[in-house]
Length: 186
Image (cartoon, rainbow, N blue to C red; front, side, top):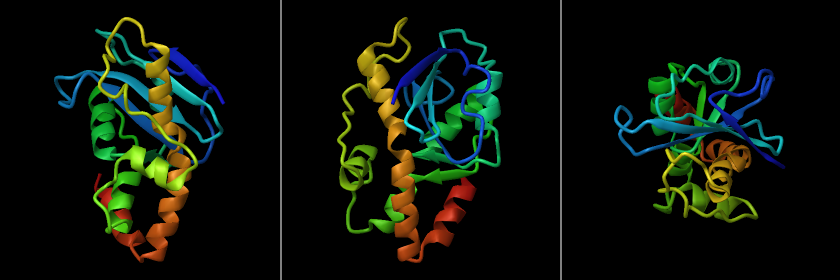
């Protein structure tokens, strides 16, 4: 497993293929038009995570990343998809769909709890714990440190495993159709 760091775009040919892609973003804040997109994290589930950083003033001209994100034959796995989809659409001009959102799936299948955050899902369904300590760090800084890189990578590292669990849960609870309607709406 390795974390690959790229500036402004993925290298040509990286992550091209089939199968779902785990996707997440880091921004300067929570208001899409005001708070710029700084990092897109993406993984195909093979054990490597790719981080694409955009510097201040970026044109967001990332043809390789846009091609992968815009591939409608591949499901994109998110946790809290509506935020990431908005940032990707606004800054990269790509609708990164079709969508599967582990947060929505959790809310539909884990009605016994109000704890649907990624940290909780990873703890409950994998043998891992993730830290959210870097969540509110300065993603627009001139350098992204190792702790930030690890944090960003961990946000996509477990989405494939969570996807498998959530698909089973949705089927078990008879909520696959309503989940798909929610994902399509996004």
